[in-house]
Length: 102
Image (cartoon, rainbow, N blue to C red):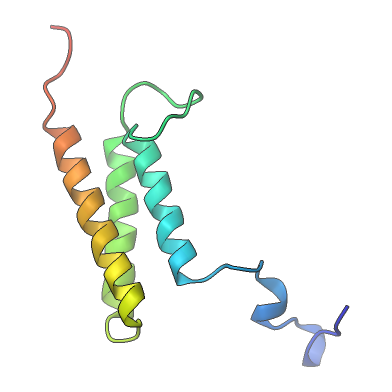
């Protein structure tokens, strides 16, 4: 094992699991949003979509978009733009679905 950096602290590369980067973060938020919208199978999830929870995840991605503007490479920017578009459209579609029962 390598020694930690000065002062007993480990560098970010020593403490981060391999493969954790901006793309992983965006895709993780995407997956959790799809789960909240019930667009991904999860037998432990409630039947009804969690629209407020999904909206929060989308809002977090929008914050990332604003705060990283001009600092992303082309692939990261395309990914974030595409994920935001996909999730916004899915959220609106589910919000506008007619309610069952009545």
